[in-house]
Image (cartoon, rainbow, N blue to C red; front, side, top):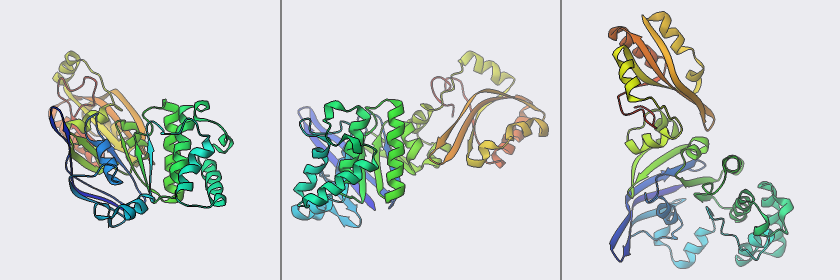
Length: 346
């Protein structure tokens, strides 16, 4: 559905050139929710603006539904953009226009009849749950309400693709959850492909099917959300996951624990999160497991849990126990000193 190949973008500044994107390639399948995560300056905002050519890349191709937008004339590009909706962190609503007018004005510019404009405004305000706000002005709305109106405005063009540029980062946690639920509903009921960028791992966790991690203008890791959570390879990816699972064990305690056994993190996914694997370990092997910390969360429609444990006992028995856990589809990682502070151990 969306295919970016070899995208590079350089900006010229007083102090020299800024290489915002460096040979970036991603592929988003039709009907999925694809997330791009990175810290400030990673290049993710530039990347998403390249999808509808709000930023034209210096090199590379941008294909949406098998059409290379970089090769289109101005008129054809405008036509193709009509199938690409976009929502922004700052809502981008006209302050002097009502909710109805904010959604209707862009539709009128496309030449739709008044009856069709009214039908679409009513329909999509209803879908986002704000049909009662027809005559309200942006100043009368909360942040969450403004974002719902912005989503309705994007949906009113009936796009095939929806781009989300940090759409939840200005919202409180409860409102963020509600907006994420709305995006899931839109994806499921309308089959709209969603490409979003964020710096919040909980957004990726909640709604994304696949994810790319960016740093310094490059994609450093990508895969399904499950793969990224269970087997993160790059240190930056691990830092993002650690923001959800923070096992803080002082080095002094960790050193003492390692003298009597092994400290490890256990990651459980899906059905394995409900199995008593750790209880079985104590019965099958001459080891004594002790849970130091842990939590269970959701990855879209599946559960994901993580435990920080200490296995006390003989080294050979501990090794057998860890192998057994892996056979039970539990991802096991050892722990080293100085890796437990404010991050998941890996």
